[in-house]
Image 1 (spheres, helix red, strand yellow):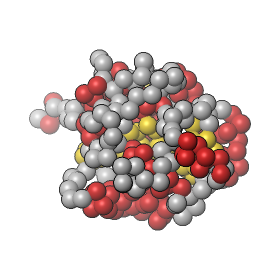
Image 2 (cartoon, one colour):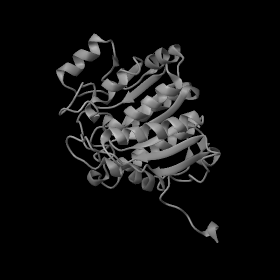
Image 3 (cartoon, helix red, strand yellow):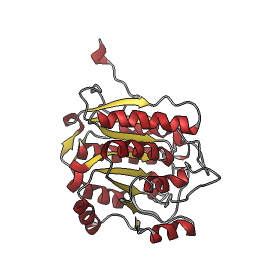
Length: 284
């Protein structure tokens, strides 16, 4: 009887058990520090639903989702203060990495990346973070909160100096000055071959975080802090496909700031779902 039913609440073809999976999908329904338009807490489910509109095969990578093993644990059960919520995210992420599985996390707002990176620090100590984003996210605090989504990369910088920021086109003066003073690898352009060669030379584990607002609002309107003059979907994918050369080093990724309430025809969610599919086919 069960073979006649399908669970559309999971990412497409996520029918593997946790024990047998190489990659673990989970979403983090948190947008408690959103400073403009809330709604990213619903991003994970929007990405899952949109995934069923995709083919399972990638002609660029010549791989099919049927060839890889991944489990979808759905949404984290979050409760308590922000610190308590971050402790839950950190604990779950740490267990996934400790079990030698790769992280596939859906936000939620961008602040959720910090507790995941704390877990990466616990397991790997020395590692690289590659960020695709419209915003620097390098404020020391925002609205009195050091754990705001506007501060996430400043907190990550306290865990690793190996940060590569791409697509950045927004931030206050202090953030840009902090990046220059500390020689943070920050570019308004997306990744190219020279950037990748530098990353390859470091020869360290890599975590990738993708804020969907790295795309121009024309391509991703469903986000809480849209920023004009961004990149096309095709331009972003061109950078992401470069990562195939370091796929064995990638220990996980997240996609954050998808806010379905502002999405038009679900184009932001379907884009995020395709990003997830391509990266999963690349690293699993």
